[in-house]
Length: 362
Ligand SMILES: NC(=O)c1ccc[n+]([C@@H]2O[C@H](COP(=O)([O-])OP(=O)(O)OC[C@H]3O[C@@H](n4cnc5c(N)ncnc54)[C@H](O)[C@@H]3O)[C@@H](O)[C@H]2O)c1
Image (cartoon, rainbow, N blue to C red; front, top):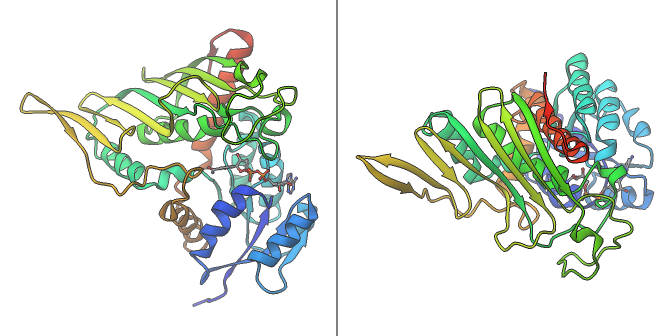
């Protein structure tokens, strides 16, 4: 058996690379080594190579130089949203497998081009929706797959923060990120909802997008105040999505909203046989013997979004699946053709918010 470790490159040496990926890779040191690092801020690449790299790990300022290294098997793309598509496509074309951060891209067209590049090159592409691997979500997915809820025809995807506007990096910059809370955290909630419903056929979207609290100063943000002149993305957005099979999804996303009931990377599913909500642990509601029942499976507090507490199991599982897909040819869980539908719906909510019109899909 070939004992050679997979050699990874990291493109984008920022917060998520450290909190999530370097952490995750450390669970799989026997199989993976960090051989190269790239950041447009060269000192970051050098520092990450020193901290997380193998001896002799390379540091680059231009990702295209990293891609020329034929000994690199796979790359993690953890740059701002705008560059996900071209860095991923170039990486696939250079023969690398890719784990790209969420959202897949800033719009559907780019996401589709990424999925096509993966098909064309035969390389693996997966997207960093690690919330799928949380204990509570895995339980609900298994319940859905076992048809315990029946047909899920109404769902809510929640990504609502009262005041948690990310003020580092380029999160407030529309050009770099393609949007604010909707594309940043709404994307997780919608991904989870579509995955559990196993429904990737949207029919119509209507949305509203707000720049209200983002225009103000000193609003009590726990991640520090921002300059309203520089915040070009929305502070909240809401979508109403109907699916081809008649199902309805409400999506709510905010970084700043005057409400107390915060819920992030959570969802509510309502089916013909039962329902699920994740707002107070997993609660499955059904009817048994003509009585209303609520089941509360005991799943060790694994429903916490990454931003609040990195969950070792979820991060480790995301890497495990990527490594197995490369080494053993097994399927990835977060498939490009699923992630691109998330991007398609988010883009339609932005478009509907701008035009005031409903967006219909072919
Ligand atoms: N999975 C999650 O839950 C999660 C959480 C946070 C962020 N993210 C995603 O991760 C990505 C990065 O977010 P972050 O918080 O780490 O941001 P960050 O600003 O901390 O890090 C991004 C890094 O990329 C570098 N960079 C920018 N353009 C580059 C390029 N062309 N080539 C190489 N390096 C480049 C920047 O200099 C910076 O160091 C975003 O897409 C974000 O949506 C995912």
